[in-house]
Length: 446
Ligand code: GDP
Image (cartoon, rainbow, N blue to C red):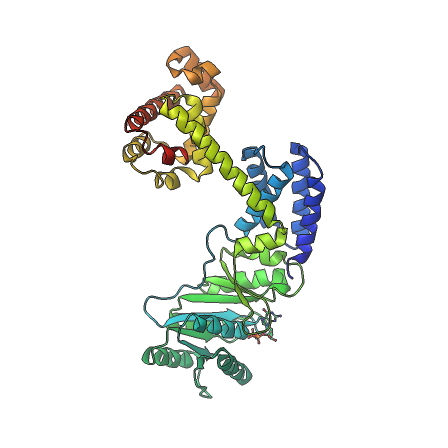
């Protein structure tokens, strides 16, 4: 498989780590250096590797130490998260966007030999299994064999193909296909554009014209994963001329250095939607970043374990916090804890959506001008305080404030704002706890 070599390399890096108990910062740096080399050797583009390593280090230092988890496992999890992000981030696989007004047009583009026609047939099969009525049309006017190939694939997939009319131009075929699809009630029209062996202007402008005429919901670039960095260059060149919406990487079943495929998403910004995994008509997998990252690391068990432990820790913390809150003990330590959790949970915006019945507080916080950027400064302020000051902010007189301001590199006004916000939050919590503590569970689990 495409990612096997990388998988082997990473496995050996982690195997060496897991022999050890406690990992120092140096150990983690060393491991990250090896991960970096492994990614580069697998042909992942350099800027992508750099970004990966920077983020991984940030995560490694920012992450709470989970005592129930071995440090080596935590490094695996951080690498896993980095791979998932590199491959398009969290969330469900995107799948195809289908238009609300059928027929949905899917435009296939790519170099000749990339597997474009085969992929058109595979998509047709997939969609017809989802009970869509599919029409396939080839626009490869220079290669009658390609047109016949598509017609054969249509038969295999059990869908229709547009009758071939020799001598028609690609734009004319496009218009004929659109009309047929509309008149005959097709859900999806898949247009297979002409490919060339190399990028050229004529091919690009023809594809751009077809896109204009057919207004596709999806314009997919099919690229051969085995061609490495060439595939990345091709994708960039196509993306400059065509409004691409996604990538299909073929020959993921072949072995090669899969790194270019891994960079594809980061370099082009386009989602990878499918992987071609065999020559057969059903050899197309929906692309799932988690599955691929899991396959590369081969340590699904570890990832699940660390996720579970992190969740447990959050719940534990949340419960401890809820207890303190219920007793009206909202001190600055608790506020700092809360700020850290907010940061972990993806900041203010995402967070506020989770809070039921705290509209008033939401307004107060919004008015006090807190944004995600202020979190770090606020944490710096709180950590410049003494323990006593954090417990009893009332003792903060002017001279103490000046000292803290100097320590945190902010001005006194900002400290006053923080204290005001703290008072408002404390009041809000008090009011909440008088409501019988309703909402605390939710609140604290942030
Ligand atoms: P096109 O010129 O881009 O339309 O390419 P074709 O669809 O004709 O494919 C070229 C060759 O690649 C054919 O022999 C296909 O069977 C093969 N092919 C396409 N996709 C895959 C894939 O995902 N895996 C493998 N192993 N072969 C593939």
